[in-house]
Structures are given as structure tokens and as C-alpha cells.
Image (cartoon, rainbow, N blue to C red):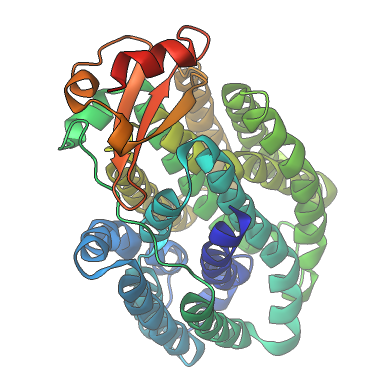
Length: 438
């Protein structure tokens, strides 16, 4: 499983590492460019997410028609061009176009769908957790390295590094990524968006994903600008003193949260704890007059983000049926990227018309309402999977298989297997086999 997942996770991580490297410093960099305003700076910070939201579904559709690998190549090439444009921008509008291009290479859902194609369902949660953990690790590393590298070599150099990462990702794509099997889904052939949004747990996960990403861009507009403003008067080269401890604590928190959420099936508790930290984080950053306490708020934010990140994608795949997974991930990621853009734009707009205290309290209240909403979330049911050779199964009996304890069945057409997803505490494996065998 690891050999199948690692190359794809590495591609996604390289891409996100490039995007995340500039986040700690891009707002103060953009503010100094010709034609910049707080609103335009906010758009630059979250701009990549707008085009991500727009192109998630087209890229997913393209991957179904021309294949996953060619689609990933197109996305990475667009990302490469956008990164180069950002590196050589001298005004706010060129930087904005480059950021839009970075996001237009919307390959996140394609990679997630490819992992779902390659990995058996009972270990897919672990695969998604590996992917989520790799993204969280990229986030944590970028927060420590971005300010240091940016201060020494310039933010332009960070964008050049991002372009290099894109080239490395393309090399990995054609040297290490296996070709996925062909899956035939015969259980509920079509998926409606309304079916996904009507499922309360899937809807909750979509909201969790969107809120987490929206708060991320709000934080990265506010943190460097506030620390370098008259309130604290930090130099840009000092920003690492806020991000480095946050990175360390975020990494430490990520492992136990992933284990507790996955192994012990307690993701709801992890999400609620993370949201509580988000609330505390923004209230602290909005209200404190101490730079030390402000850094504590930054640490709270990073811990909350890293606790959530390894679990979000995994939980979506657990709540969705097999025929819904691609659509559910696509919808969730599109909405999350749109929320990312709204978060950055709103933060830039609020900076121009409001004060730090009001912004911190307002975001804290919104996060608290999110906490109350998430109380509705349920932890996922634990299922087992039965694998039988297609030739041993009576198709008529299979199609008539109905039980509240059977979530679904489907066919792996490449390996000629029938897979039945069921509650093992309620149904004995041997009884299930006898019901559908020839």
C-alpha cells in the first residue's frame, strides 16, 4: 500500500510545500508591490484557491476521459508556469495572475481519486491519512522554512523553489506512480450532488474542510502583517520566531491526533478540540498586546490545523459510498478552495476597514458557531470487507442482497473481484458468503 500511495502523496506534498512556503510572508511581500492595497493583498494570498475551486471538477472529468497521469501532467505544467510568473512579478497584478495560474492546476481531487483506485477500501482510510499527514507535514515544514529562506534570499526565491518542486513532481509522476486498475461500479450507477449534500455527515465534513481552509488564509493574511505593524514592530526576518515553535508543536500534535482519530475511530472529538483551539487562537491574536502571547495564539492555530488535516480527506471517503467518493471529494475540495479564496479576500478587506481586535473577535465568534454545528457530526461506522472471485458469485443473489447492515457492493473489474462492505458485528462472514455464492 505504501509504495502505491507514497509517490502520489509526494507529488501532492511537493505542490503544497511550494504553495505553503510563501504563505507566512506573501502578504507583507505583496503589500510592497506597485499598485497594492489590503484587499488586493488578500486576493493574492487566497487567489490560487479561487481557480482551484473552478477547475477541480473539470480536471476530475478530464482524468476520467484521458486518464489520471496525463491530467496530472497538465496540472503540474500549469502550476509550473504560474510559479515562474510569481517569481518575476514586479506589480500586484502580475503576482495575482501568477497565483491564479498556480491554482488552475487543480490536481488534488485527481490524486485522491487515483489513490482510491489503487488501494483496497479497508485500508483506504490509512492511505488517505498518509496523504493528509504528508500535506500537514508540508505545511509544518513550510512554516518553519518559508520565513527563514524568504528573509535570506527573498520571496522571489521561494517561488523559484516552487517551480523546481513542480519539475520534481513531474519526474515522480512518470517514474514512480503506478497505473490504477479499472473499477466498475454497479451499485447505484449515478451520483447526484443533492445525495451528497443531504447526507448529514458528508455535509458536516464538507463544512469542516471549508472552514479549516478559510481560516488558514485569514491567518496568513493577518499574522505577518500584524507582527510587522506598529502593534509589535517585528522585522520580516524575525517572523520565523513565531512560525518555528508553531511548526514544532503542530508536528507533535499531528501524530497522536491521527492515531486517536483513525485507530480509535474518534475523529469527531479531534475536530471539536481543533475548532476550540481555532477559537482561542483568533481571540488571542486579536486581543493581546504581548508579542509572546500572540505567538501562543499562532501555536494554537498551527496545532488545530495539523490535528485536523490528516483526518479530513479520510473521513469523507469513509462516509461516502464507493460511487460517491470521487464526487464527494470533488465537491468538498471545490467548496474548500472557494472558502480559502473568501478567507483571504475577507481578511484583506477587513484590514482596510476595521481594527485587529474587531477582526479577532469576529473570526472567533464564527469559529464558535462552527463548533456548535460540528456537535451534530457522528463518528463513522466500522465496516469489514468481503472479497470473492467474480466467478464464484451468483449475480442474481448479489443484486437482491438487501440489509441495513450491508453498506454496498461493487466490482473490481481488473482483478475480477466482488467486494461487499458490511457490518461484521451484525453479519457473520460465512453467512454472507452462503447468501451470494453459486
